[in-house]
Image 1 (cartoon, rainbow, N blue to C red):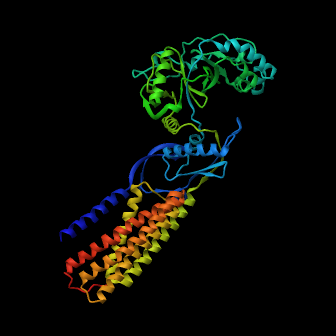
Image 2: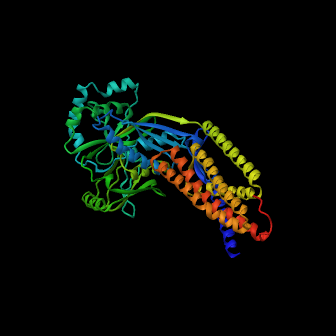
Length: 557
Protein backbone atom coordinates (compact mmCIF):
# COMPACT_ATOMS: atom_id res chain seq x y z
CA UNK A 1 0.00 0.00 0.00
CA UNK A 2 2.88 2.35 0.81
CA UNK A 3 4.36 1.60 -2.61
CA UNK A 4 1.06 2.59 -4.25
CA UNK A 5 0.95 5.83 -2.27
CA UNK A 6 4.41 6.88 -3.49
CA UNK A 7 3.46 5.97 -7.07
CA UNK A 8 0.38 8.20 -6.92
CA UNK A 9 2.36 11.06 -5.39
CA UNK A 10 4.98 10.81 -8.15
CA UNK A 11 2.36 10.83 -10.93
CA UNK A 12 0.47 13.76 -9.40
CA UNK A 13 3.71 15.66 -8.76
CA UNK A 14 4.86 15.22 -12.37
CA UNK A 15 1.43 16.30 -13.63
CA UNK A 16 1.56 19.47 -11.49
CA UNK A 17 5.10 20.24 -12.71
CA UNK A 18 4.02 19.68 -16.32
CA UNK A 19 1.01 21.97 -15.92
CA UNK A 20 3.29 24.64 -14.48
CA UNK A 21 5.74 24.24 -17.36
CA UNK A 22 2.91 24.71 -19.89
CA UNK A 23 1.14 27.55 -18.07
CA UNK A 24 1.08 30.79 -20.15
CA UNK A 25 3.55 33.42 -18.96
CA UNK A 26 3.81 37.16 -19.35
CA UNK A 27 6.98 38.06 -21.23
CA UNK A 28 8.45 41.24 -22.69
CA UNK A 29 8.83 40.97 -26.45
CA UNK A 30 9.75 43.24 -29.33
CA UNK A 31 6.54 43.38 -31.36
CA UNK A 32 5.45 45.32 -34.42
CA UNK A 33 2.60 47.80 -33.91
CA UNK A 34 1.36 49.96 -36.81
CA UNK A 35 4.62 49.39 -38.65
CA UNK A 36 6.76 50.37 -35.65
CA UNK A 37 8.72 48.01 -33.39
CA UNK A 38 7.99 48.47 -29.69
CA UNK A 39 8.58 46.49 -26.50
CA UNK A 40 5.38 45.20 -24.93
CA UNK A 41 4.21 42.58 -22.42
CA UNK A 42 2.40 39.62 -23.97
CA UNK A 43 1.19 36.25 -22.68
CA UNK A 44 2.83 33.27 -24.34
CA UNK A 45 2.63 29.51 -23.89
CA UNK A 46 6.21 28.32 -23.26
CA UNK A 47 6.04 25.96 -26.24
CA UNK A 48 7.92 27.53 -29.12
CA UNK A 49 6.97 27.14 -32.76
CA UNK A 50 9.23 26.70 -35.74
CA UNK A 51 9.48 28.58 -39.01
CA UNK A 52 6.72 26.59 -40.72
CA UNK A 53 4.24 27.22 -37.89
CA UNK A 54 4.73 30.92 -37.18
CA UNK A 55 6.54 32.33 -40.19
CA UNK A 56 9.80 34.22 -40.16
CA UNK A 57 12.71 35.03 -42.46
CA UNK A 58 14.78 33.16 -45.03
CA UNK A 59 18.20 34.66 -45.87
CA UNK A 60 20.71 33.54 -48.49
CA UNK A 61 24.24 34.83 -47.87
CA UNK A 62 27.16 34.95 -50.31
CA UNK A 63 30.80 35.99 -50.07
CA UNK A 64 31.12 39.68 -50.98
CA UNK A 65 33.99 40.05 -53.46
CA UNK A 66 33.14 43.59 -54.56
CA UNK A 67 36.20 45.04 -52.80
CA UNK A 68 38.60 42.12 -52.74
CA UNK A 69 38.73 38.69 -54.35
CA UNK A 70 38.61 35.65 -52.05
CA UNK A 71 41.01 32.86 -52.99
CA UNK A 72 39.30 29.82 -51.44
CA UNK A 73 35.62 30.70 -51.08
CA UNK A 74 34.57 27.26 -49.87
CA UNK A 75 37.03 27.26 -46.97
CA UNK A 76 36.26 30.90 -46.14
CA UNK A 77 32.55 30.09 -46.14
CA UNK A 78 33.13 27.21 -43.70
CA UNK A 79 34.80 29.60 -41.24
CA UNK A 80 32.12 32.24 -41.78
CA UNK A 81 29.44 29.61 -41.14
CA UNK A 82 30.72 29.07 -37.58
CA UNK A 83 30.61 32.81 -36.81
CA UNK A 84 27.15 33.27 -38.31
CA UNK A 85 25.82 30.25 -36.40
CA UNK A 86 27.21 31.61 -33.13
CA UNK A 87 25.65 35.03 -33.77
CA UNK A 88 22.28 33.51 -34.58
CA UNK A 89 22.43 31.31 -31.46
CA UNK A 90 22.96 34.43 -29.33
CA UNK A 91 20.29 36.31 -31.29
CA UNK A 92 17.69 34.41 -29.26
CA UNK A 93 15.91 32.72 -32.17
CA UNK A 94 14.27 29.36 -31.52
CA UNK A 95 15.44 26.47 -33.71
CA UNK A 96 17.17 28.50 -36.45
CA UNK A 97 18.54 26.85 -39.57
CA UNK A 98 22.11 27.87 -40.46
CA UNK A 99 23.69 25.66 -43.09
CA UNK A 100 25.99 25.75 -46.07
CA UNK A 101 24.42 25.40 -49.52
CA UNK A 102 26.92 24.23 -52.12
CA UNK A 103 30.32 25.94 -51.97
CA UNK A 104 29.25 29.57 -52.28
CA UNK A 105 26.17 30.17 -50.12
CA UNK A 106 24.91 30.06 -46.53
CA UNK A 107 21.20 29.53 -45.84
CA UNK A 108 19.75 31.15 -42.69
CA UNK A 109 16.15 30.59 -41.57
CA UNK A 110 14.87 32.54 -38.54
CA UNK A 111 11.45 31.61 -37.10
CA UNK A 112 9.38 34.42 -35.63
CA UNK A 113 11.61 37.23 -36.94
CA UNK A 114 9.87 40.10 -38.72
CA UNK A 115 12.57 42.78 -38.29
CA UNK A 116 14.43 42.01 -41.51
CA UNK A 117 16.79 44.98 -41.32
CA UNK A 118 18.07 44.13 -37.86
CA UNK A 119 18.55 40.44 -38.67
CA UNK A 120 20.50 41.22 -41.83
CA UNK A 121 22.68 43.74 -40.00
CA UNK A 122 23.59 41.25 -37.27
CA UNK A 123 24.41 38.50 -39.78
CA UNK A 124 26.39 40.67 -42.21
CA UNK A 125 28.36 42.85 -39.79
CA UNK A 126 32.06 42.00 -39.97
CA UNK A 127 32.62 43.04 -36.33
CA UNK A 128 36.38 43.61 -36.65
CA UNK A 129 37.28 45.70 -33.59
CA UNK A 130 40.45 47.83 -33.30
CA UNK A 131 41.74 50.36 -30.79
CA UNK A 132 43.91 53.01 -32.48
CA UNK A 133 45.46 56.30 -31.32
CA UNK A 134 44.38 59.43 -33.20
CA UNK A 135 47.08 61.41 -35.00
CA UNK A 136 48.48 64.44 -33.15
CA UNK A 137 51.26 65.35 -35.60
CA UNK A 138 48.96 67.11 -38.10
CA UNK A 139 50.10 64.66 -40.75
CA UNK A 140 46.95 65.25 -42.79
CA UNK A 141 47.62 68.98 -43.13
CA UNK A 142 51.10 68.21 -44.47
CA UNK A 143 49.84 65.99 -47.30
CA UNK A 144 46.66 67.96 -48.04
CA UNK A 145 48.21 69.85 -51.04
CA UNK A 146 49.28 66.53 -52.55
CA UNK A 147 45.76 65.12 -52.00
CA UNK A 148 44.26 68.19 -53.69
CA UNK A 149 46.51 67.72 -56.70
CA UNK A 150 45.63 64.02 -57.06
CA UNK A 151 41.91 64.76 -56.69
CA UNK A 152 42.12 67.51 -59.31
CA UNK A 153 43.89 65.21 -61.78
CA UNK A 154 41.18 62.62 -61.16
CA UNK A 155 38.46 65.14 -61.97
CA UNK A 156 37.17 65.37 -58.40
CA UNK A 157 36.45 68.80 -57.01
CA UNK A 158 34.18 70.53 -54.55
CA UNK A 159 32.69 72.71 -57.29
CA UNK A 160 31.63 69.78 -59.45
CA UNK A 161 30.23 67.95 -56.43
CA UNK A 162 28.23 70.97 -55.28
CA UNK A 163 26.90 71.51 -58.79
CA UNK A 164 25.86 67.91 -59.08
CA UNK A 165 24.05 67.99 -55.78
CA UNK A 166 22.56 71.45 -56.28
CA UNK A 167 24.08 72.64 -52.97
CA UNK A 168 24.40 76.44 -52.78
CA UNK A 169 24.52 76.82 -49.01
CA UNK A 170 27.46 78.44 -47.30
CA UNK A 171 29.87 76.32 -45.33
CA UNK A 172 29.55 76.79 -41.58
CA UNK A 173 31.72 75.71 -38.69
CA UNK A 174 30.58 72.37 -37.33
CA UNK A 175 33.49 71.19 -35.26
CA UNK A 176 31.40 71.60 -32.15
CA UNK A 177 29.08 68.86 -33.36
CA UNK A 178 31.67 66.14 -32.84
CA UNK A 179 33.40 67.34 -29.69
CA UNK A 180 34.90 64.68 -27.44
CA UNK A 181 34.75 66.37 -24.03
CA UNK A 182 37.80 65.63 -21.96
CA UNK A 183 36.07 66.24 -18.65
CA UNK A 184 33.80 63.22 -19.19
CA UNK A 185 36.24 61.00 -21.04
CA UNK A 186 36.89 58.68 -18.16
CA UNK A 187 34.73 57.36 -15.37
CA UNK A 188 35.72 56.34 -11.87
CA UNK A 189 36.46 52.76 -12.91
CA UNK A 190 39.03 53.74 -15.51
CA UNK A 191 36.87 52.64 -18.44
CA UNK A 192 37.34 54.36 -21.76
CA UNK A 193 34.25 56.35 -22.59
CA UNK A 194 33.33 59.21 -24.90
CA UNK A 195 30.50 61.67 -25.38
CA UNK A 196 29.25 63.59 -28.39
CA UNK A 197 27.09 66.67 -28.44
CA UNK A 198 26.70 70.27 -29.49
CA UNK A 199 28.78 72.96 -27.84
CA UNK A 200 27.49 76.44 -28.55
CA UNK A 201 30.66 78.00 -27.16
CA UNK A 202 32.93 76.25 -29.64
CA UNK A 203 34.73 78.47 -32.09
CA UNK A 204 34.58 78.05 -35.84
CA UNK A 205 37.94 77.65 -37.56
CA UNK A 206 38.60 79.67 -40.67
CA UNK A 207 38.01 77.75 -43.89
CA UNK A 208 41.01 77.21 -46.12
CA UNK A 209 40.41 77.77 -49.82
CA UNK A 210 41.95 75.52 -52.42
CA UNK A 211 41.30 72.06 -53.84
CA UNK A 212 38.84 69.36 -52.86
CA UNK A 213 40.36 68.62 -49.47
CA UNK A 214 41.59 72.08 -48.45
CA UNK A 215 38.24 73.71 -49.26
CA UNK A 216 36.01 71.01 -47.76
CA UNK A 217 37.77 69.54 -44.74
CA UNK A 218 37.90 71.41 -41.44
CA UNK A 219 39.83 70.45 -38.33
CA UNK A 220 37.77 69.14 -35.44
CA UNK A 221 38.30 69.88 -31.77
CA UNK A 222 40.29 66.74 -30.98
CA UNK A 223 43.60 65.76 -32.59
CA UNK A 224 43.20 63.75 -35.77
CA UNK A 225 39.51 64.62 -36.25
CA UNK A 226 38.17 66.48 -39.31
CA UNK A 227 34.70 67.56 -40.40
CA UNK A 228 33.35 67.08 -43.95
CA UNK A 229 30.06 68.60 -45.25
CA UNK A 230 27.62 66.28 -46.99
CA UNK A 231 28.10 68.10 -50.32
CA UNK A 232 31.73 66.97 -50.44
CA UNK A 233 31.38 63.61 -48.73
CA UNK A 234 30.92 61.47 -51.86
CA UNK A 235 33.78 63.16 -53.74
CA UNK A 236 36.19 62.82 -50.82
CA UNK A 237 35.19 59.20 -50.26
CA UNK A 238 35.94 58.41 -53.91
CA UNK A 239 39.21 60.32 -53.71
CA UNK A 240 40.36 58.39 -50.61
CA UNK A 241 39.78 55.13 -52.50
CA UNK A 242 42.17 56.16 -55.31
CA UNK A 243 45.45 54.17 -55.35
CA UNK A 244 47.41 57.42 -55.72
CA UNK A 245 45.83 58.81 -52.55
CA UNK A 246 46.55 55.56 -50.74
CA UNK A 247 50.17 55.79 -51.85
CA UNK A 248 50.45 59.41 -50.70
CA UNK A 249 49.04 58.65 -47.25
CA UNK A 250 51.35 59.73 -44.42
CA UNK A 251 53.59 56.85 -43.29
CA UNK A 252 52.05 54.83 -40.46
CA UNK A 253 48.67 56.58 -40.73
CA UNK A 254 45.19 55.54 -41.94
CA UNK A 255 42.00 57.53 -42.49
CA UNK A 256 38.66 56.30 -41.16
CA UNK A 257 35.14 57.74 -41.26
CA UNK A 258 32.98 58.03 -38.15
CA UNK A 259 29.91 55.82 -37.77
CA UNK A 260 27.35 58.64 -37.58
CA UNK A 261 26.48 61.79 -39.47
CA UNK A 262 25.31 64.91 -37.68
CA UNK A 263 22.96 67.70 -38.69
CA UNK A 264 23.36 71.42 -38.05
CA UNK A 265 20.44 73.46 -39.31
CA UNK A 266 19.81 72.30 -42.87
CA UNK A 267 23.23 70.72 -43.40
CA UNK A 268 24.60 67.27 -42.63
CA UNK A 269 28.23 66.62 -41.74
CA UNK A 270 30.54 63.63 -41.41
CA UNK A 271 33.56 63.03 -39.21
CA UNK A 272 36.88 61.86 -40.71
CA UNK A 273 39.71 60.60 -38.49
CA UNK A 274 43.44 60.21 -39.07
CA UNK A 275 44.73 57.32 -36.94
CA UNK A 276 47.92 55.40 -36.26
CA UNK A 277 47.79 52.42 -38.60
CA UNK A 278 49.10 50.04 -35.92
CA UNK A 279 46.26 49.16 -33.54
CA UNK A 280 46.93 48.91 -29.81
CA UNK A 281 44.88 45.71 -29.71
CA UNK A 282 42.13 44.11 -31.78
CA UNK A 283 38.91 42.30 -30.94
CA UNK A 284 40.71 38.95 -31.04
CA UNK A 285 41.66 39.40 -27.36
CA UNK A 286 38.07 40.21 -26.33
CA UNK A 287 36.43 37.52 -24.19
CA UNK A 288 33.06 39.07 -23.35
CA UNK A 289 30.85 42.02 -24.26
CA UNK A 290 27.60 43.00 -22.53
CA UNK A 291 25.13 45.84 -23.18
CA UNK A 292 24.37 48.22 -20.34
CA UNK A 293 22.77 51.58 -19.64
CA UNK A 294 24.72 54.29 -17.83
CA UNK A 295 22.77 57.21 -16.28
CA UNK A 296 25.36 59.66 -17.61
CA UNK A 297 26.71 58.07 -20.79
CA UNK A 298 23.50 56.41 -21.99
CA UNK A 299 23.66 53.02 -23.69
CA UNK A 300 27.10 51.41 -23.62
CA UNK A 301 28.79 48.09 -24.33
CA UNK A 302 31.06 46.86 -21.55
CA UNK A 303 33.84 44.54 -22.69
CA UNK A 304 36.38 42.26 -21.02
CA UNK A 305 39.79 41.26 -22.38
CA UNK A 306 41.79 38.09 -21.82
CA UNK A 307 44.98 38.09 -19.74
CA UNK A 308 47.32 38.77 -22.66
CA UNK A 309 45.04 41.46 -24.07
CA UNK A 310 44.65 43.15 -20.69
CA UNK A 311 48.43 43.27 -20.23
CA UNK A 312 49.05 44.74 -23.68
CA UNK A 313 46.16 47.18 -23.33
CA UNK A 314 47.45 48.50 -20.01
CA UNK A 315 50.99 48.95 -21.33
CA UNK A 316 49.90 50.66 -24.57
CA UNK A 317 47.30 52.97 -23.02
CA UNK A 318 49.86 53.88 -20.36
CA UNK A 319 52.09 55.21 -23.15
CA UNK A 320 49.31 57.42 -24.50
CA UNK A 321 47.85 59.10 -21.43
CA UNK A 322 46.05 62.35 -22.46
CA UNK A 323 45.92 61.16 -26.08
CA UNK A 324 42.69 60.26 -27.87
CA UNK A 325 42.06 56.57 -28.55
CA UNK A 326 39.66 55.71 -31.37
CA UNK A 327 37.47 52.63 -30.99
CA UNK A 328 37.13 51.37 -34.57
CA UNK A 329 34.52 48.80 -35.60
CA UNK A 330 34.62 47.55 -39.18
CA UNK A 331 36.89 50.47 -40.14
CA UNK A 332 34.43 53.02 -38.72
CA UNK A 333 35.24 55.11 -35.64
CA UNK A 334 32.59 54.61 -32.95
CA UNK A 335 34.11 56.96 -30.35
CA UNK A 336 37.48 58.60 -29.69
CA UNK A 337 37.81 59.26 -25.93
CA UNK A 338 40.73 60.86 -24.09
CA UNK A 339 42.86 58.43 -22.08
CA UNK A 340 43.25 59.92 -18.61
CA UNK A 341 45.08 56.83 -17.33
CA UNK A 342 46.09 53.33 -18.34
CA UNK A 343 43.21 50.87 -18.88
CA UNK A 344 43.41 47.19 -17.95
CA UNK A 345 41.03 44.27 -18.42
CA UNK A 346 37.67 46.09 -18.58
CA UNK A 347 36.42 48.95 -20.74
CA UNK A 348 33.32 50.23 -22.40
CA UNK A 349 32.16 51.58 -25.75
CA UNK A 350 29.77 54.51 -25.46
CA UNK A 351 27.15 54.68 -28.19
CA UNK A 352 26.07 58.26 -27.51
CA UNK A 353 22.51 58.46 -28.83
CA UNK A 354 22.40 54.79 -29.82
CA UNK A 355 19.48 52.65 -28.65
CA UNK A 356 19.67 49.77 -26.19
CA UNK A 357 18.89 47.45 -29.11
CA UNK A 358 21.99 48.79 -30.90
CA UNK A 359 24.08 48.10 -27.80
CA UNK A 360 22.69 44.56 -27.57
CA UNK A 361 23.42 43.83 -31.23
CA UNK A 362 26.94 45.28 -31.00
CA UNK A 363 27.69 43.19 -27.90
CA UNK A 364 26.32 40.13 -29.69
CA UNK A 365 28.55 40.42 -32.77
CA UNK A 366 31.60 41.25 -30.64
CA UNK A 367 31.11 38.10 -28.55
CA UNK A 368 30.65 35.96 -31.66
CA UNK A 369 33.81 37.35 -33.28
CA UNK A 370 34.65 38.87 -36.63
CA UNK A 371 33.69 37.32 -39.94
CA UNK A 372 36.72 35.94 -41.84
CA UNK A 373 35.26 37.26 -45.12
CA UNK A 374 32.61 39.91 -45.86
CA UNK A 375 29.13 38.55 -46.62
CA UNK A 376 26.26 40.01 -48.60
CA UNK A 377 22.57 39.10 -48.66
CA UNK A 378 21.82 37.50 -52.03
CA UNK A 379 18.18 36.78 -51.24
CA UNK A 380 15.74 37.57 -48.44
CA UNK A 381 12.22 36.18 -48.13
CA UNK A 382 9.56 36.60 -45.50
CA UNK A 383 7.40 33.57 -44.71
CA UNK A 384 3.97 34.87 -43.80
CA UNK A 385 1.83 33.93 -40.82
CA UNK A 386 -0.87 32.51 -43.10
CA UNK A 387 1.35 29.52 -43.89
CA UNK A 388 1.91 28.99 -40.19
CA UNK A 389 -1.81 29.19 -39.36
CA UNK A 390 -2.64 26.69 -42.09
CA UNK A 391 0.07 24.31 -40.89
CA UNK A 392 -1.06 24.60 -37.29
CA UNK A 393 -4.68 23.87 -38.17
CA UNK A 394 -3.81 20.81 -40.22
CA UNK A 395 -1.35 19.52 -37.64
CA UNK A 396 -3.84 20.01 -34.80
CA UNK A 397 -6.55 18.30 -36.85
CA UNK A 398 -4.35 15.27 -37.54
CA UNK A 399 -3.45 15.08 -33.85
CA UNK A 400 -7.11 15.26 -32.79
CA UNK A 401 -8.23 12.64 -35.33
CA UNK A 402 -5.41 10.28 -34.36
CA UNK A 403 -6.19 10.63 -30.65
CA UNK A 404 -9.95 10.15 -31.21
CA UNK A 405 -9.41 6.98 -33.24
CA UNK A 406 -7.08 5.61 -30.59
CA UNK A 407 -9.65 6.29 -27.85
CA UNK A 408 -12.41 4.55 -29.83
CA UNK A 409 -10.24 1.51 -30.57
CA UNK A 410 -8.87 1.14 -27.02
CA UNK A 411 -12.22 1.55 -25.26
CA UNK A 412 -14.12 -0.49 -27.84
CA UNK A 413 -11.67 -3.41 -27.83
CA UNK A 414 -10.25 -3.48 -24.29
CA UNK A 415 -13.23 -2.00 -22.41
CA UNK A 416 -12.30 -0.96 -18.86
CA UNK A 417 -8.58 -1.63 -19.38
CA UNK A 418 -8.76 0.53 -22.50
CA UNK A 419 -10.21 3.39 -20.40
CA UNK A 420 -7.21 3.10 -18.05
CA UNK A 421 -4.90 3.22 -21.07
CA UNK A 422 -6.66 6.36 -22.37
CA UNK A 423 -6.19 8.05 -18.97
CA UNK A 424 -2.49 7.16 -19.12
CA UNK A 425 -2.39 8.47 -22.68
CA UNK A 426 -3.74 11.87 -21.57
CA UNK A 427 -0.96 12.08 -19.01
CA UNK A 428 1.46 11.06 -21.77
CA UNK A 429 0.38 14.06 -23.88
CA UNK A 430 0.83 16.47 -20.97
CA UNK A 431 4.22 15.04 -20.00
CA UNK A 432 5.52 15.14 -23.59
CA UNK A 433 4.52 18.76 -24.14
CA UNK A 434 6.05 19.70 -20.78
CA UNK A 435 9.35 18.03 -21.71
CA UNK A 436 9.42 19.96 -25.00
CA UNK A 437 8.71 23.23 -23.19
CA UNK A 438 11.23 22.50 -20.44
CA UNK A 439 14.07 21.90 -22.91
CA UNK A 440 13.10 24.92 -25.07
CA UNK A 441 12.39 22.58 -27.96
CA UNK A 442 10.62 23.99 -31.00
CA UNK A 443 7.45 22.49 -32.40
CA UNK A 444 7.52 22.23 -36.19
CA UNK A 445 5.16 20.58 -38.68
CA UNK A 446 7.43 17.51 -38.90
CA UNK A 447 7.54 17.66 -35.10
CA UNK A 448 3.77 17.34 -34.99
CA UNK A 449 4.14 14.30 -37.25
CA UNK A 450 6.65 12.85 -34.79
CA UNK A 451 4.21 13.58 -31.97
CA UNK A 452 1.42 11.65 -33.71
CA UNK A 453 3.84 8.77 -34.42
CA UNK A 454 4.89 8.62 -30.76
CA UNK A 455 1.20 8.38 -29.74
CA UNK A 456 0.91 5.30 -31.93
CA UNK A 457 4.02 3.81 -30.32
CA UNK A 458 2.60 4.57 -26.85
CA UNK A 459 -0.61 2.71 -27.75
CA UNK A 460 1.44 -0.17 -29.13
CA UNK A 461 3.05 -0.58 -25.69
CA UNK A 462 -0.38 -0.82 -24.05
CA UNK A 463 -1.53 -3.37 -26.64
CA UNK A 464 1.48 -5.59 -25.87
CA UNK A 465 0.77 -5.41 -22.14
CA UNK A 466 -2.97 -6.08 -22.48
CA UNK A 467 -2.46 -9.07 -24.77
CA UNK A 468 0.02 -10.58 -22.30
CA UNK A 469 -2.49 -10.03 -19.46
CA UNK A 470 -5.19 -11.76 -21.53
CA UNK A 471 -2.92 -14.77 -22.06
CA UNK A 472 -2.21 -15.04 -18.33
CA UNK A 473 -5.93 -14.79 -17.51
CA UNK A 474 -6.68 -17.52 -20.08
CA UNK A 475 -4.22 -19.74 -18.19
CA UNK A 476 -6.39 -19.36 -15.10
CA UNK A 477 -4.22 -16.97 -13.12
CA UNK A 478 -5.71 -14.40 -10.73
CA UNK A 479 -6.18 -10.75 -11.70
CA UNK A 480 -3.23 -9.57 -9.61
CA UNK A 481 -0.87 -12.27 -10.86
CA UNK A 482 -2.00 -11.86 -14.49
CA UNK A 483 -1.39 -8.09 -14.35
CA UNK A 484 2.07 -8.53 -12.79
CA UNK A 485 3.06 -11.21 -15.30
CA UNK A 486 1.64 -9.24 -18.22
CA UNK A 487 3.71 -6.15 -17.43
CA UNK A 488 6.84 -8.21 -16.68
CA UNK A 489 6.76 -10.26 -19.89
CA UNK A 490 5.92 -7.29 -22.14
CA UNK A 491 8.62 -5.08 -20.65
CA UNK A 492 11.53 -6.38 -22.74
CA UNK A 493 9.67 -5.99 -26.04
CA UNK A 494 8.54 -2.45 -25.17
CA UNK A 495 12.02 -1.33 -24.09
CA UNK A 496 13.69 -2.89 -27.15
CA UNK A 497 11.27 -1.21 -29.56
CA UNK A 498 11.53 2.19 -27.87
CA UNK A 499 15.32 2.03 -27.52
CA UNK A 500 15.90 1.33 -31.21
CA UNK A 501 13.53 4.13 -32.22
CA UNK A 502 15.21 6.55 -29.77
CA UNK A 503 18.60 5.69 -31.29
CA UNK A 504 17.22 6.43 -34.75
CA UNK A 505 15.89 9.76 -33.45
CA UNK A 506 19.30 10.59 -31.97
CA UNK A 507 20.95 9.99 -35.35
CA UNK A 508 18.39 12.27 -37.03
CA UNK A 509 19.01 14.95 -34.42
CA UNK A 510 22.80 14.71 -34.73
CA UNK A 511 23.02 14.89 -38.50
CA UNK A 512 19.75 16.60 -39.42
CA UNK A 513 18.90 20.30 -39.46
CA UNK A 514 15.80 22.40 -38.98
CA UNK A 515 12.55 20.43 -39.45
CA UNK A 516 14.37 17.08 -39.30
CA UNK A 517 15.72 18.00 -35.88
CA UNK A 518 12.27 19.13 -34.79
CA UNK A 519 10.89 15.72 -35.78
CA UNK A 520 13.67 13.93 -33.90
CA UNK A 521 13.26 15.96 -30.69
CA UNK A 522 9.50 15.46 -30.56
CA UNK A 523 9.82 11.76 -31.32
CA UNK A 524 12.42 11.17 -28.60
CA UNK A 525 10.49 13.17 -26.00
CA UNK A 526 7.32 11.26 -26.86
CA UNK A 527 9.04 7.87 -26.60
CA UNK A 528 10.50 8.65 -23.17
CA UNK A 529 7.10 9.80 -21.94
CA UNK A 530 5.38 6.74 -23.46
CA UNK A 531 7.76 4.38 -21.64
CA UNK A 532 6.94 6.05 -18.35
CA UNK A 533 3.17 6.12 -18.86
CA UNK A 534 2.86 2.62 -20.35
CA UNK A 535 5.04 0.85 -17.79
CA UNK A 536 4.64 2.95 -14.64
CA UNK A 537 1.39 4.96 -14.91
CA UNK A 538 -0.76 2.21 -16.45
CA UNK A 539 0.37 -0.32 -13.83
CA UNK A 540 -0.36 2.20 -11.08
CA UNK A 541 -3.93 2.55 -12.38
CA UNK A 542 -4.30 -1.24 -12.31
CA UNK A 543 -2.93 -1.32 -8.76
CA UNK A 544 -5.48 1.30 -7.68
CA UNK A 545 -8.27 -0.85 -9.20
CA UNK A 546 -6.96 -3.98 -7.47
CA UNK A 547 -6.76 -2.21 -4.09
CA UNK A 548 -10.37 -1.01 -4.41
CA UNK A 549 -11.83 -4.34 -5.61
CA UNK A 550 -9.38 -6.55 -3.67
CA UNK A 551 -9.13 -8.64 -6.85
CA UNK A 552 -12.65 -10.05 -6.46
CA UNK A 553 -14.10 -8.54 -9.64
CA UNK A 554 -13.51 -9.84 -13.14
CA UNK A 555 -11.05 -7.67 -15.07
CA UNK A 556 -12.68 -6.13 -18.14
CA UNK A 557 -10.06 -6.57 -20.82
